[in-house]
Image (cartoon, rainbow, N blue to C red):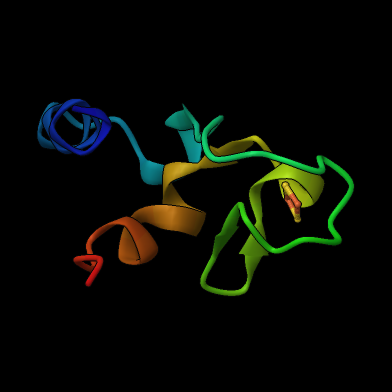
Length: 65
Ligand code: FES
């Protein structure tokens, strides 16, 4: 859902640096130790949970296995 909204905003001329997404999910320890919330190099609990679309768009485009 976030991807579609962010793409829609981008199509309407909103720059990726002005689009913010909240990735609050899969958090357990919430202090950056367990790795449960890790999204590539980012720890959602430590580095976010709110990120600019510019920062996470390539990471959210990758399918999980
Ligand atoms: S929830 Fe444990 S590292 Fe983020």
